[in-house]
Length: 486
Image (cartoon, rainbow, N blue to C red):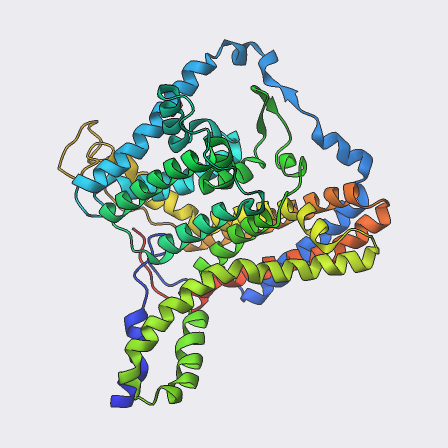
């Protein structure tokens, strides 16, 4: 009995809390998961054949046409400076309100405005909005707006004391992105801690912009700016030289290539961090440490199961943190292996690194749909609560806009609808990536035959990502974990 208790102890203490974006009942897949995997792989293969046969360099060139929207009366009539000023005010007000409500409001995640507004409305909702409307964040970034305001007051304050090191490229943004994901997954933030984090990030942006110059820092170091700039490349709207232009969706991803390996790692981390979030609480992942590593390393400690458990619990935290960081490099290794195969098949002189950077942006649609499939239910369930929270942002019992009693009943989503939506989204994202990679190949390789050959390894890569993504999504469902929507 004592041994059984010791064996069960890690599982009992590490059992994850109910997820806000999951379901209130056990859901069994209507057909075995392997049928979904085979079906998705077949659909990808079919899309590859269609794209390879019908898409040529000439037809692909038509995708890059754009239309200047200011030729239309409606867009000419819009007072752009006034709209921009309003959006900047809302952006800065949102940041300041998040900080204020966390500092002096109730330290309750569900009663305080800042948790829902930042994590759901901004981090998730604004990401999805950016994919539709383009890189509006570049113009309304609250930290940049505040820095610009100080610059107008004190000209030259953010001209930079040192030149930004070129070798750093986007590594500062990547490091900050990794820290952000660690906080999101393991930080257990509350309203107060979130406010302190936002204050710290505000100080960091001011200090970095003062030291290296605002243009360099907000281009390479402010990770939200880098993240939204990449997402915006999928949008049908582009802002070129102050003019709003309409283009085909996703074509912005082909207008330029990733300029540095740090940017490729950033893209891969967008993908790998979401995948890790999906797998970190599954039976597979938890048992990998507590069932296999724990018992393999236990004899080395010289202690009993009960005595060694506190040490392994700390080791598990390190294990999780390391997995978050290394996930990007794990995906990088896989990606470079397939790029190497493409290079061997086509026998081109370009290096693996050059080709890897050339096709990096074709992975962004996959990262984007991974994000949607994992988190879009949060927009519906918790994000809708922002309607109530704006009336009582501090949790003091106010009802400023008379919306405090709205949406009191919890929203429960049908698990079957969610699962099939996730399947179709993942499949759609991978098909788009197949299409983009093929167009990119037509630009890179001198012949249609080489371009098609180069995409065979890329097709295998897409199939691998698809099956991994669907398998991860199916884990909590097929494992029969009961989680509560809320």
